[in-house]
Length: 633
Image 1 (cartoon, rainbow, N blue to C red):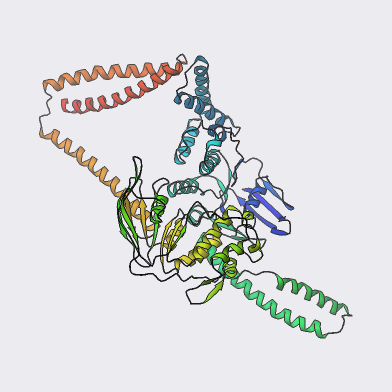
Image 2: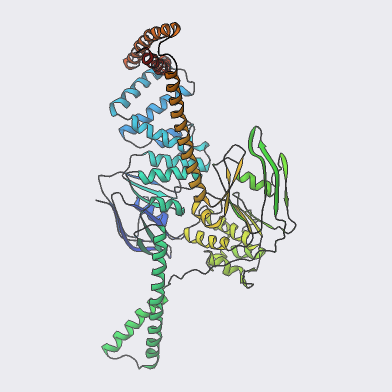
């Protein structure tokens, strides 16, 4: 069943062609990724499909009886609107009911006095949830909100940070009961645990998906085919990311071969044009027309396999970096507790852990931007750090890119001993020669971060410290940076949520668990995750085995003692029967009260709490009664 059809779509901005006459479709259940270099039309295409922008030519057809949800890179939330109203603004009966119910609960949780009006409102909300059978949907919403750390749903959107706004937008998109899901960079601002949860969620969700992402591990786990925009054309690869890399390489090789053949034919025809008299026959005119078409084909750009630039760092001595008994806290919040480590030559180490566990703080301590509470950090005399921070690069005055770069280095020394010019280096990483004369303030946020990273690399450091260097980079740029870092002979310390990037670069990992302890794991991220999952399975098996052993020991102990109850146990057995009867009666009465609609809000809360207490007591006393009854029998 076809959900989406894109027919002969074209779009230009000024003189820049984004894509021309591209055609593709999505079938029900298909999960596809859209990849391309930055600035070549990925987000524009998604905006056109979502109806936000209009194409120059072509059309988009979406099946009429399906629902569509779209996560764009820039939200249009009103700052004064609450998080709750923002997330549940879709106009369906179920979402309206959940929004009203959650509002009542949030008001009660805020300590608002429960007046008769709020009390009646709560009753109506519960009745509507029952009528629509919306409790499963409400549980799904709570799970998603919890995973993204969204707890204060009455807070206004204007009070949120950029990352919190992104999570709010993502939660809203996933909560909506939708058929076609369109996501533009959904993993931005998420830590690895959130990304892995969303990865599992989308993999198992019964939904049709089209997404733009630079997270290759996420792409590989979720999507089963890939669309790529390149030189205005669309290419379709029916497979995972490794399959895409293989087939793209084959395509480029074949195109280059064909292009060389065209060039040879063009040179032959050019010689004929220069030596032949003015065309007078229809046959000659046809040949000249063919020559003009051949000339146009030869002048078209052809993708080439990128050759790497491998920079040569400054010489590094025997002493690299020593960290001895490092402690750091913010008030009572311990981030680093008694950590020691000695870095070795050529070491490449990754740092992983949930947000807020001290990863960026650790890098700032090494760079001397923060002072530790205890311990010391000693760098070798030959160490030259290259530090890429999340805060970005501060540029005085609005200057051109090429001038900013040449201020750092006119040329860059490569590992072969040769030198490349700053302009050539920039061009390799996506800043085309004409763009290098653009002013810094005219760059996008992603382009500014990429320029900052390139300048960091150009300074020929021998110890790179990189804090989230992969955010907002396209896959082509990521591959080039990976290649550079892979061949970098100095030390590298990287914080990144990009698991594919970490697997390619690092040989061991510092794991920040949030309790001040830092675990050193030798292996890449996938090795660590497999080991962690294995540990969790072993722990669960051990707990299960322990419960079985305890149960067996209890039964053995019972067999070893007299089956007859003592006088005290007989009395307890008789009293338990009476207590269980009384508790069951109270439980039934509480249930009737909660369903009667007669209680006020405070009474509803009290009854609900007591109902849970009675249920727990019943379970506890029933288990004891069964234990005594077996011995009595």
